Amino acid sequence: MIVYPEQFNQPAMDYIKDRYMGLADDLMMVYVPMHVNNHWYLMVIDFWDKKLVYLDSFKSADHNETTLRLSLMVEVATYLEHVIQNTDFWDDKTIIPPTLSDFEPIYPDAGQQPDGTLDVCQWMMNSQMWLDYTLDEVNDNTRMAIALDLVTSEHNPLGETISDRAVNYWDAEML
Image 1 (cartoon, helix red, strand yellow):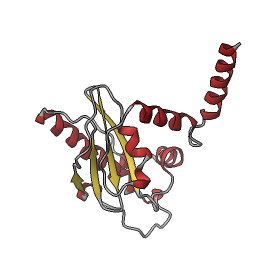
Image 2 (image 1 turned 135 degrees about the vertical axis):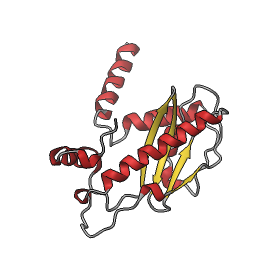
Image 3 (image 1 turned 30 degrees about the horizontal axis):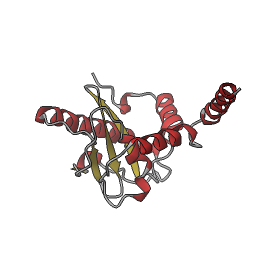
């Protein structure tokens, strides 16, 4: 059973907004990492172009598996549609929230990676440079750069602690 946001009480909605979302007025994109059958892919809800984007650097050749992934994207988008319909998520109370279920699903060609790689993060990190949703091949150096960026990002509240511990570990090993 899915519990839709309109069934939440007001304190629950306030908690979601304050902890995870903020106001929706300036939303341009929402990144939703998806995990299905031990496989990660990324859904981007593109508010600007009104698209649901399926990004997968290791697409399945199994049509049923792809259909499952895409249907779960639509289900998550529909759920989020229910969230943003609540006027508490908008500073401008007169705005008509977008209907995510009307967004066009797109499945851009993307570079395919060897089995076992985790390249979904690259799309999220480089989104400001996108002209489209294609992804070039990623190597180990790129993966390490992504991992370091995620750990040391100003948005990671543990980034400084992790960096300090890494320096302390390195210093101890060098003695």
